[in-house]
Length: 88
Ligand SMILES: [Zn+2]
Image (cartoon, rainbow, N blue to C red):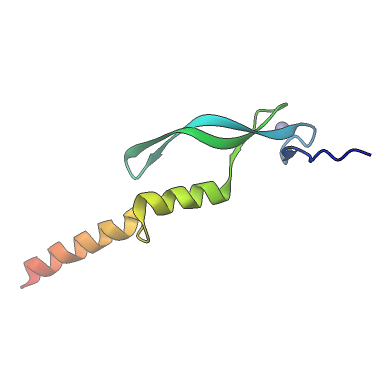
């Protein structure tokens, strides 16, 4: 009887490998800004090297960076303000 919890999950791409939790440096361009997060948790397939970040982690991160507003919202608000200023 094995009581060991299975680590990771079967890879959705190659279906042969196993995606195992690892730490990596996440780097991505987001709205013209380079976003770099060291020690980000990621699942990497040991066969095809598919890397998947946890959705929960990403959402928490975005929330921390931008709060309830997305960068896109902030931009459109700024544009509206300047156009109404010229209209008056
Ligand atoms: Zn794979």
